[in-house]
Amino acid sequence: MKLYSFFRSGTSHRLRIALNLKGIATDYVAIDLRVDEQQNEAFKAINPQGLVPALDTGEQVLIQSPAIIEWLEEKYPTPALLPEGAEARAHVRALAAMVGCDIHPINNRRILQTLRKQFGADEAAINAWCGTWISEGFDAYEALIGADKSRGRFSYGDTPTLADVYLIPQVESARRFNVDMSRWPLISAIDRACSELEAFKQAAPMAQPDA
Picture 1 (cartoon, rainbow, N blue to C red):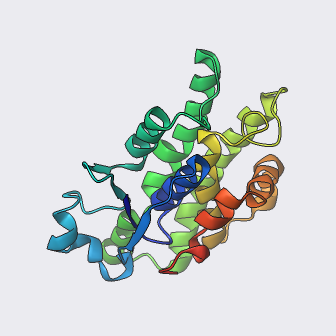
Picture 2: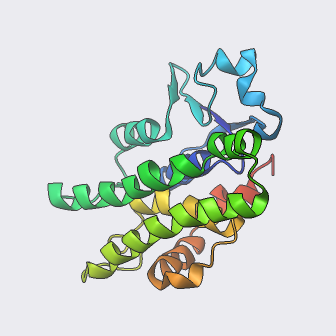
């Protein structure tokens, strides 16, 4: 399989974590967002949306990290990224969606470039923008996991789940935008637990060949 990725892309980062947790090796194809390589015709022939990540399975090209990760979970069910039980799965999916639907999309590169170019935002304004939405989302995430008295070392239980796959790249993004993580001790503890695992270490932005 070929993984079209950019080292600093949060969506690429979450997919790399999921692939590593599943033990699936891929050929890494770097798409440099810094020079808008994702908008080139060659890449748009692979993904017409012009976004990373994309995963070429050898039979088809999959796009959109949530869809790809769900495909991985169905195709390679062990180790599972979702717990057993409909209620537990809904809880984990909700935690993942808080990041994937409510924090990340309004802080991604396209939005920030528009703020810079169209609305004249400087880097202090960009950091304040990102910090606002990350903080609001992390406050809710921290409250939810804090209310789960059966929670282990990770967002749910004692093994990484879909929630952690989404959370850790957003923690990385928070640091990049100078958000003080000390405000969320439970999230910070999960980040430390994940950082001890090879699947997360190998997926980290600075561990990628295009970093």
